[in-house]
Each structure stands twice: as structure tokens, then as C-alpha cells.
Image (cartoon, rainbow, N blue to C red):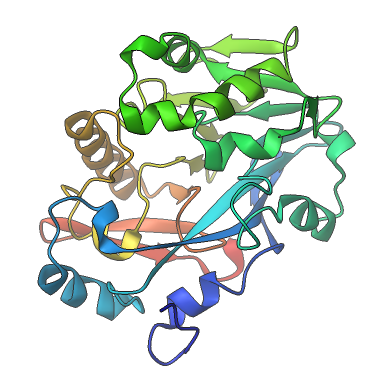
Amino acid sequence: MPSDSPTAAPVTAAIRRSAGRSVTAEAGDYRVVALCDGHVDFDLSRLPGVAIEDARPAAAPHGVDAGDLAVSVNAFAIVGPDRTYLVDSGNGSIRGPGLGHLLRALADAGLRPEDVDAVLMTHMHGDHVAGLYDGDRSVFPNAELVVSEAERAFWDAPEQLSEMQRGQLDMARRGFATHAGRTTLVNPGDEPVPGVAVVALPGHTPGHVGYRVGGPDPLLIWGDVVHLPALQMAHPEWYFAFDVDPETAIATRRRILDEVAADGIRVTGAHVPFPGFARVERAGDGYLYRPIDGAG
């Protein structure tokens, strides 16, 4: 049973208290606002082949009990002088009260759904896309949908999907349908927003991407490169059950962790403990995720 005891697992307890909150960092000409849609409770089966006796000692020093896992679901607003963008949209209200708090988090940041000019998708899994729509209407009435070309192609070939991915298909389709006529396809290296570049992060899905917000101290929003930092930073080879191509996901994770550790680039993501702004350091054969106090 999930426990909110701060002494047993303080990071996990904080994750479960963060729904509807917002935290702001600066990156170049933008404010980047972490928005907590809520959390999902998991068990270790989400990391196939990982034994609890191996996971517990890896997680405990980071304030996490491997037998009682909670994963943040975060989205991000990128706010410029006259335009506002959203990276992902959370899970909406389809999975119970633990999720669906994105609009409350937007309001906490002083933003409204109609302020959003474009939604930049990392990929189209339900916990990223289901917050885009309410029935057959877009939650963000003025927003263009931006998605990678490879991601669109993946969902447009349902005969190739595994059973697990087919369970996400209707949500991806609804996201596309509610933005029909206002969807832009992009590729790695493109800048769909001035100063915000698409970064290839394949493996979790074939078209999974991140967004690098430029400036003197850049910030990479890396989507689902890591789901459980307390476990996957020390063991990048531990993959997530929803990874379409685990070998590629592992290779991507190692590459990105190497790059951001070497370059000192700030990172955050959809499933790192809210608000998630951090720097990465090498530690032996693995890495450490160092949250940044004050998000700066």
C-alpha cells in the first residue's frame, strides 16, 4: 500500500503531494514552468527483469522505497515575451484523482488554456497526450499541435503496434483528431519555436523527442528518457515496460546522460520527481541526478 511517510521515502511522499503545483526556471529568453499533472503509483514490474533485492539498495539512498514507487507526471510551459508553448499535456482525467491536475498547475503559474499557442509533444502516449482533449474538443483552443514526423508515422501504422502500444492508440488518435488542420510535423534539429530545438530520443517510441531550450545555460526537456531516476541513473540498462524498443531506449539514455553530464546541461523530464530541474553527474558506471535548488 502506498505510504506518504516522509521518513520512509521522502522523495516519494513529495511526489504524491505535488499535483497542481508549478515551479519556474529561466532559460535564455524564456521562463520554463514545470507543471505537475499528478502522479502514478507503480510496482517494480514496470522495470522488467529487475529484482527487488537489487532495486532496494539502489533506491534507498535517494529517498525512494523500491517496493512503493510513485512516478511524477509533468508537463512544461515555455513562456516568452508574447507567446506561450506547452511541452506535453498530462493525462487528463482518465486515470482517477491522482492525475488530471494540469489546468490547476497552469492557473498556479498565472496561465490559461487559451494562452497556449502550441503544444510540443515529446510523444503520444496517454500520460502525455490525453490532457490535450476533452471529448471531441481541444482543451487548448488556440494551440497548434507539434509532433515529430516519426511519431506520427508510428501511430499511423497500427498493424505494427504491440498489444501494449495498441492500448495507447485511441488516445494518440484523439490527440491528432482534436488538432486536425493545425498539426505541424517536425524532425530532429528543427526549431518549431525560436530558440527551442527538437532533439532525437528514440527508443521509448520511435519518434520520441525532447526539446532543448537554448541560452547561456540551456535546458533539455527530455520526455521519458528516465522514468525512475532513483533506479535508472545508477542502472541505465534498466528499461521501462512501455519502451517500444528497449535496446534503443537504453542506448539513447546512456548517450543523453553522457552528453548532459559532460556539458553540464540542465535537464528535466516528464517523470522525474517534480519539479525535476537538475544536473547530471557521472558516478562510477552510472550517473547521479542532482536536483537544482531554486530551479536555477
